[in-house]
Image (cartoon, rainbow over all chains, first blue to last red; front, side, top):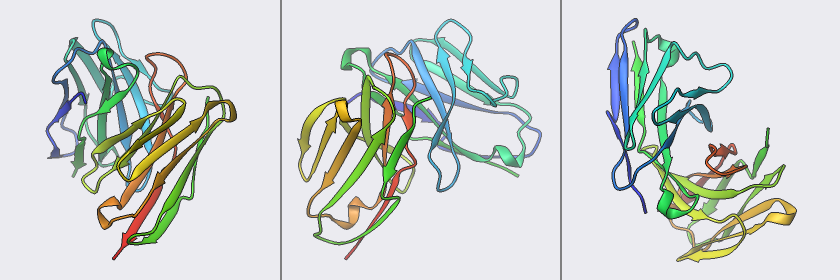
Length: 116
Length: 109
């Protein structure tokens, strides 16, 4: 199946700083990628849809100025958590669809963010 | 929006036992996928199954789209099957997956 990577796998940052998370499709091009957030023992919640070459679409309740998404190429989307606070600590996961593989979506391994 | 309900929420099995996990959804879907989330958080694709039946080793899945449910069967369970199983659906093309709350499976030796 298609491979999606994320970097970093985990990050610890101080409150007030910004953190950038990268999501890459390794063996296919993705015009659309999705960003999810997962809190402990909960399901995945969609944060935003990342569109190559245009603005991201954010879900209700997700602050677009806090979670900056840039989809600069067909293989890379980035999520920047700005002015991070402890409540932003979570597991962030991206996904993408391989256009050559029908509608099946593939997920990155996730990034665990801890804000101290 | 579409609702996705999974049952049971938790399941404990003795190694070697069989189980059936269920996913109900409230509207027509374009895509349905089953995932296994391992202890490190990685989502492993199990099945892409908007309709019909598929089998992969000890796992099989059936989706009855007209009745809006899908089943995941695990046979001869092993301790490595432990983790959370998610069902996720897509309402139309190139839209995000909507996840159920998952079934947390523990297989004990």
